[in-house]
Image (cartoon, rainbow, N blue to C red; front, side):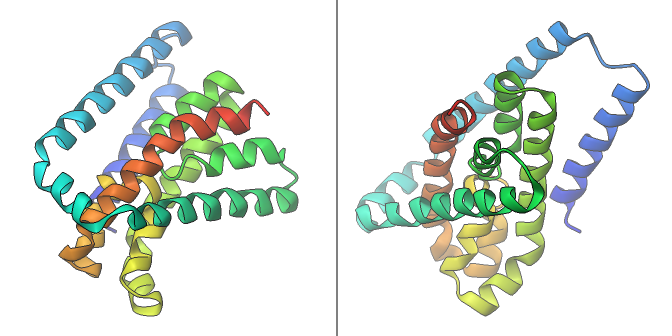
Length: 200
């Protein structure tokens, strides 16, 4: 297991233990803390993007065709979640909303907790955490079986940050720009698609 996966699991376990022991703040304070951390996360992502000037130049060079990949990844994620909902007896709207998190567990979990409730929000958090960890673990196999371009699909929105190093390691540095752009587009789609499906 990689250090990234261990950090994610450790943070989740500490949060669960703190909640069980009654060490967590009250609901109103917790909501404020979550929103503050979310804003900080978006701020840091914006800083990181603004400093990646070479990425913009490479995007222009590759052209509009690279936009198709994240759209196919989005469609596959949502349709996959919809298919699973019929087997587990879950409301298809909420399943698609969870699938539309595309691995961005912090945002999708917070949004669905606010829009639907803690149960669906927790499912979104765990599903998307698992997606990120699974993509890290299966990356070598995906590249070997389906090619380098396929390495971008499992991580979803996380291919612009946490799983980007893993994509580069197994698929090559030439995949970095495509991976970054795909993750960025999927991250933008999360903001619109999660509430769209949750409130159908």
